[in-house]
Every structure is written in structure tokens, then in C-alpha cells.
Image 1: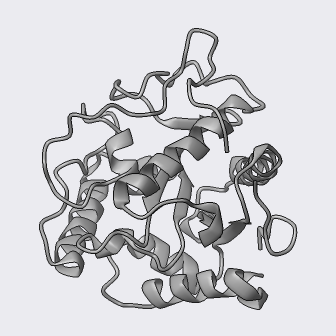
Image 2: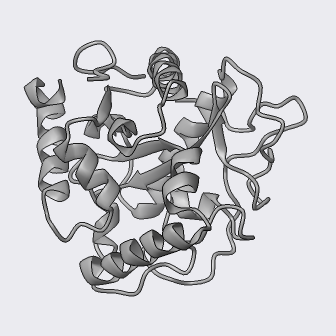
Length: 253
């Protein structure tokens, strides 16, 4: 269990506990999961080839666990991937996001399963979603450099919070109850951050680009950049490069 971790693992856990223990934190799903002690963790020590493989093994195990999901909110385990400060050469939000996309790209390069046929391969499609081991995922990048968007700052360590795409579609999808949940969370974001929510927050499949929600900018300017995650004709991404370890095994507690 992560609460028994030591060193920076413990520090990252306590940071997360502090954030999610705040009753004003916008994501009610994350708060409930943490309170019920169903959050899974992987602590990444560094980013070399063996470490990305280590992270990939942990993510593969998480996907396999998620494939056995019984459809109940109490068993919808989120995964928090936390990175050691020394592993991330970043200072700005853009730097952290570039690092996060590098990690996702390298995970894709060693993905043990083919890309699902029903998911678009190019991030500039509204039907794209990050996939691994055959499962579409939502990846929320949070960094210490986020100052204005406090809801995207989970402490001193860069973190990627991962959930299977289908859980958002079920509990916060384009249904009357899902729209109500989304409206509540986004109102909470406005209050918690003290600034208007990003224009890029949207509903999957509604025409907006999913990747923009993974890595929200500090300001709310129109985005003209392109997603660094690019799948080539051989189903490999164009980026190369990034080591990992965690507190005890994958610490999928």
C-alpha cells in the first residue's frame, strides 16, 4: 500500500492525500476513490528504456485488472503514475507536458496489443484516445508548474492519472445524468481554480480533441500546437526515448 511507502514515494502520496482530502477538490470521483483506498500507484524512478518497460508492465497489469471491472463505481480503480523529481527535466507547464507525451509515446512503442480498430489512430481526430494493451484510456497530466489551474497540480511531482475511457463514458458521458455530473465537476473546477475552466474540457466523441484535455495549458488561449503523439503508418509513434520503479512491485494496492 502506498501509504506505507518511504522516501519520495511517501512524499508524493502525502501530496496527493492533501489535495484529494480538500473538500473543494473538483474531481469527486478521485476524492471518493482515495477515501475508499482503491487508488492504484506506480512510482517511476527514472526514464530510460528499462524503466519505460517497467512502467509498461505495470500499466499492462492495471489494464488486465480493469478488464475484469464489474461496472460498479466502488471498484473503478484509478491509476496514479508518479515520477521522481530527478526523472523529469522540466520547469514549465509546457516542459512537463512534453515529458508526459514522451512517456505516452514510448509506452505506445512497446504496446503489447494492437491499437483497437474502433479508436482513431491520429490525435487530431475527435475519436482518438490513448490506448494500451487494447484498452482506451484517459490520461490526466498534473504538474507542479500549474499555478493558476490548481486542480492540475497534485504536489511536487509530475503525475499522470489514468482511467479506462469507458468509466467516463458510463458515469459522465453524454446522458442526462452524465451531463449533470460533468456540469457539477466543472463548476467545482471554476471555484477551486478561481479562474474559468478551460475551453478544451469537453465530452469524448462530441467533436472536440481528446488530447487537449490530457494536457491543459495554464491560460485559455486557442491552441494551435499539434499533439506530439503521432502514429505512423507502421503503427509506431514518431517520438523515441524515455526508467521506472515503484515502491513495492507495481504497488497496485
